[in-house]
Image (tube, rainbow, N blue to C red; front, side, top):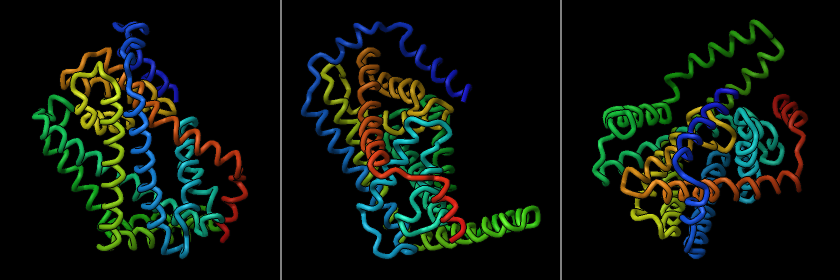
Length: 323
């Protein structure tokens, strides 16, 4: 946590050391409300696709599960990740909503794993497409070569499509836990089996194709958030750079930081925008705008959901493990 705070402070200092707040304020002069609204609509479309993708992952174990029942837990988990450390929102989604969703923690953990891998795959693909379209050298720009991008993407695909290759290792670890703590270990082993069963189901050709298509739609919509936010600021000379800022800023969230990725996301978003010729002041204003567009909606809506439908995480967790 201290490392994350330190890195966030460092990146914020690197951004603001030569820019005044007055310059940033002026960069927002003439901002288009229409394009900001369009960005918010694109955001809603993207998250709608994410919710449907998650519902598709859960439907085998929870027949009849609706989009509406999935929406609240997913947005609540994103809200918690945005304000709490250690990705607490992922733990919340894994344990706090199982009765509502009609599933178990083992299944939800498997869907979270697949969700993260699909998102990382989409970001790597978008980065590869962006650097190719804009004629950039990935090694000098992102610190890795195009071959590394391809290897990383293929590795993710391998894990998604062939979970049976690491199944024996996971089961062996579960049996080891049973030897150390028989009672807890057996319950954990049962959940591990459910997770692996879900991974094998999701790896099937037709199912995975459907999940990839929802992922493509979700990330294209998020790309439009970045692009429309850039179009909203007349001080930006190259708004198409938003399509480069999307994968670069998103990959930067892998760096340890504060909840909401303050500093890290903004620094690398500014870097992507200035690489394609935008002024540093305008790029900084853009980073703040797109960060707000990505952070505020899920935090407000997900937080409201938690206030209206409070959960008791410990009780739900115990019920899920014992079921």
